[in-house]
Structure formats: C-alpha cells, structure tokens
Amino acid sequence: MTREHPGTSSARAWLLVAPAMIVLGWGGNQFLPLLQLYRQQSGYTQVQVNILVAVYVLGIVPGFALSGAWSDRFGRKPILLVGVVLGIVGSVILAASASSLAGLCVGRFVSGLSVAAGMVVGTSWVKELSVRGGRAEAGARRASAVLTIGFGGGAGVGGALAQFAPLPSVLPYIVQIAASVAAFVALLAAVETRTSGGQGKSLLGDLRIPKRSRARFVAVVLPLAPWVFAAPALSFAVGPSLVGQAVPGFAVGFATLVTVITLGFGWVTQFVSGPILRALRGRAGLVGVALIAVGALLLIPAATSQQVWPVLLAAPVFGIGYGLSMVSGLTTVQAMATPDDLAGLTAVYYSLTYAGFLLPAILAALTAVSPIWVLLIATSAAIVVCALIAARGMHSRRD
Image (cartoon, rainbow, N blue to C red; front, side, top):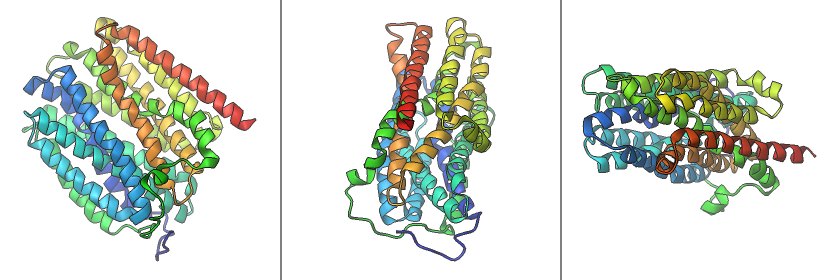
C-alpha cells in the first residue's frame, strides 16, 4: 500500500509536510487569545465563549475520522492539501465575523475540520517519511513538536497582533492566510507515501482498533488521552479567565503570554523527549498527567483571590505535562498500528485527546453549583484516578 519514490529515504523529506501542520495548528490556536478581544469588543459572555470552543471540537472530531480514513484510502497529499484550503476558508470567515456569533461558529467549525487534517494526516505522513528516512523512532516526536510550534506560535503571533497591532480582529487571520499559501506551495513538492486504494474497509472499519491491541488501548491509552489537551485548556482558557480583572487593559496580552509559556515548555519537552521516554520506561504518560493534576491545584490561589502568579507558575507545569502525555500517547498508538490503519488509529487517539478541550465548558457550567476552586480539586482527583487505572493497565499487560 505504499509507493516508493526517488529520494524517499531522505532524512529531510518530512520537512515539506511540517509547514502545513504548523499553519493549521496556528489557525486553530490563534483564536484562543482572541477570545478575550471578542469579549471586550463584542460583549460575548463566558457561555458564548464556551460555545465557540465547543463548536471547534464539533468540527475537529468528525474531521479526525474523515481525514484519517480518507488519507489511508486516497493518499496523504490530497487530503492535507484540502485541509490547508479549509484552513484558509476558516480564517477568511473568522476575519469577517468578529461581531457575529453565528459567523464565528461557522469559522471555528471549518477551522476544526482543517486542524484535524493537519494533525491526523500530518502525523501519519511524518511517521511514514521518518520510517523511510531511517528514523522511525522520531516520527511521533517530530509530529508532536511541529504541531506544538503551530499551536504555540499561532497563539503568540495572533495574540501579539491583537494586543498591539491595528485591525486586531482581522490582521492575525491575514498573516495566517499568507503563511498557509506558502505552506500549500511547499506541500505540493512533498513525497506521497500512500497510493489510492484500500477501499475494502468501511469508515467504521478504518477507525476500528486492531484486535491485538484493543485491550491495551482501553486499559492504558483511553484513561490518559483526554487529559492531553485538558492541560492547555486549563492553562490558557481557564487560568487567564480567573484573573481577568487583575490585568486591566492587558487581558489579551496576558492570555497570549500564558499560551506561549505553556506550549513553549511543551515543545521543549517534546523536542528532548527521546531520552526522557527511555528513562521513564513506558511511564511518561503517567508522569505527564501527574504534572497536569499538580497544575490544576496550582490554579487554586488564582481562583480564590485573583492572584496572577499562580497562573504563570502553573503554565510551565501544564506545558511539560502536555508534552510528555502527547508524545507518550502517540508513540504508544503508532506502535499498535499497521501501515493500513496508521491514520485511522491516530484519528481515534486525537479524538479522545480533544475531549479535554470541553473541560473549560464543563467547569463553567458547574460553577453554578460549586466554587471553581472546589472544581479544580475535583479535576485533579479525577486525573489521579485515571492515572491509577492506566498504571494498573500497564502492570497487567506486563504480566
């Protein structure tokens, strides 16, 4: 099911795919610091902001399923090219819809579809090109680090432009669109690793976890996956909202700073994750979610007294936890997959991780019945329980 091509063994072939992954992650995440801008300019409530986050997840989850299955069938390049085009369309809609909640919802849904393609197809493609280049073990680390560059860089660039540049609700999207056009051109020269074919499976079949790996997936991967993106959600969605009144006139800039710190530490962790994974011997995911549980507890002083320093202190803890959890989870899932179900299984994993982005909306809804500091303790406790379940699953698999 793979196609050989002159030069496919090049150790640098994956770099032509990386720009598309970066601009798609950029397009998905630059919106988060802009939420503070929309609240200031258009008066959106926290409930409406949570709706915008939820709509993005509603786009990205089916996008995972479709892009993974279709790229396994029809090739990586055409699906990722479509993803870049969708990213441009999403940014155009968002740039034109600052004062329209419905328009922002449509734009976020389309952006979710595009980011899904970047994550699933890009991750699978980078893995396959890494195998061909003789660096199979680097596939998950490269993909995770590239996506984090997009997530963090996009939030940093978008937030800085929104805070300091003219046309704050338009210019960030224009810059991202220009970068997307350049990434599209680079992607045209990338080496395809899949031929069209493999239509024998249904969509459900493409997403089915291989029987030989099902027990390990359920026992180890499933309990940990949702906390991967719960970490950045807690850090730069929940954290800045707790101290908004403590940073008057700098809400967008502060949210951007927290985002960059979180994802910066996440990227560094992913970049040096090779020896860390070897040293932890399969327990990197447990260490990662344990750090996320600590980060949730660090936010408590911000929740009770609007102190800014706990949000800044928690950001690198969340970032390291996110980085370890993501690389560990991807490495585990890719080890389970065959070439014919690599993208499909990656899609299932990413869908589970993105459930964590619903956490801010859940916490906001529960504040009607409980103080946020109590909810943060409960969140930390839930993470610990999931880690214990996964640890038990690891132990039983070794037995």
